[in-house]
Length: 466
Image 1 (tube, rainbow, N blue to C red):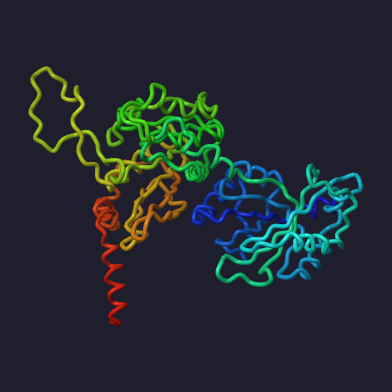
Image 2 (image 1 turned 120 degrees about the vertical axis):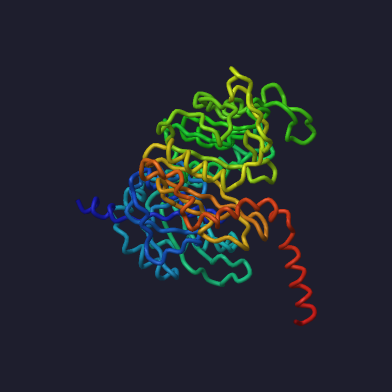
């Protein structure tokens, strides 16, 4: 009973990658939610830190998180910690011996690793760190190649590479539990993808989006701006059935000019299905079709467990929909008015987001998530520019910087109620509506060079002493 009580009070340490810092907390929270667990950080939690200590988890919970996370590198059962090696020693000696003993008995094999963040230690110094742990009751045999148990001493020297302290800011010691899925970034790299386009989503970000959406086994996931299917690849990896639409006939059918260097035209088998086949996920592929995201094409029902997408911004891919600004001549009698495909016209970003949120409100299951990218002009950005909907709750808003004056924000929303008659028009009475209509000028601002001009003017002011 004492062992159970002690184990129920265990803490776990996550070692996180120091890229995509904004995306880490929503990812871990989403993966915990899949287990029905809240995010419970220990005292002195710092979101930007590479080390997070969490309460209220089981080892199975940790394994589940690490089986999906691309933001976390490794996880450990935390045995001791402190600001100095003396505090670490005291903490370790107070750790329950009944939890230590199964991993330290004489028939076991083990290895101790030393990891330092923001500082490189000489090999001799690493050995000294390990020898200093002689007070721990290890009775087993050291095995560097194939140990049964791995332990790690982790030293945190802060995040400023220009101001590295002599001694660590904090020290941790624990038993290694599992590594994260950072290898997916390499194994699914777009560079090695069978079918790519000008805007194919980075592999790491694709998996982050799938995690934010809480995509799981047997879900049905939809991408209304599917492109070359990078997001379908990521979602299918987690066991979801995937489908999508796009207005571009050539992209959907894998025809036209290639986006690869030294290749003029796409090959006969360059398509989205081939991408899923490349990663052994063809059975998860439902289908894709040519369709205009601004026009209704689905029966009015909650169909999708998640909608994960990257709408066009008008930079490398045009924002367009079917239709014409020209006067439409009255069709001849007996001719069906919608029997032909009209020419395309501009599809403003504010309209794209309004349509996307309305579509999600109608076609997501209750509790389903919408995850999409929102491009912003940074000097003018404010939270009021994030589109809202009465049926969707904003869960997270993460920034990825693109340049000194532009970025895109990964927006995650969750369906909290079924749509009512006037919910699709709620944005018109929202005082924020005029603010997010400002997205319509994103392309012009992206190419405006205003940021360069202001930088030059600031430089001139500095030189003149004004």
